[in-house]
Image: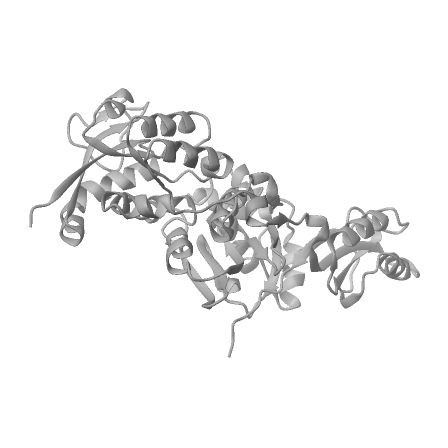
Length: 440
């Protein structure tokens, strides 16, 4: 059988771009045997054409001239791996207008400008494939819009940032402070020198916005996602949670109820040690999805890194080359919220259980004051933990676990607690997320 040759042009020759080039150049023969199409890397565009990379390109492939890709009509697919939301957006639009189908791993770009870019792609009768934008090598997007198409997806609970998961795993296993665990993550290459977008939850929020828009079939804006990071997490709270049977994870959560009210949030969460997600350690990712027909499924794997992410990018290139992505993209129905009948719930209206740690002076009447504040805000106590020993300013930690209550009730109660005499500093508060289990 004669192989069809599909030429591709790559923009961005960093870590992921190097992995993509490596797969196309070194595994081209085996890919061609499996799919009957040979991918040919026609050009690689990057402003840096001198720094050594972990893959050797054929002579004449690397260039700093984007027009080389745009003006070559034989290049069918453009791959955007620049990162960011400014130059990357301009490049992606130019590739679409030049008649190229596009593959991108840029979650920030798609979360913030996806609806606009999808519209431009359709205007030019082209497609955008973006499997690698969420959870690296895990085939998450294709599962949601392919294998789970027959389902009404009602909830997703995901660990979708390997940096945060590595930090929290180390804080738990090694009893490390946040700063120490972050430094270890940076040394191992799991965290950037500037880890802000990871540790403040933004990276997870970008991914959740993309996933929720596909799962619920409506336009999700980044502003729809409540976001809270792990910067303020104390190993004392991890220890206390562990004693009570909980494991701390940064979760990306999407839920839809029967009235089409949608909850979208990213925040540190205590989950039961018995839950599957509690056993996801180090830089790995996992997401638990609940569908109306299939029940619960769990996807697990490496959510970042050169080769896992490159694997997803090349899978998208292959899907585009075979014509599958164009069909999927043309039939990707993402409506406005009003058309879909979707409303976004604010964080204030979320119902949850809460872990609260208060540093109290060790004297009579303080706990009575705390109980009074909670009762005034309609909050019921489920559990209590207090150890002997004096902390800073003659205080002792008191841990309270609540029954389910509204976020706005907890927020108001915490504000009132801070004003109490005998309370040292701002109380720590972490949500307890009860992930359902699909059991017979």
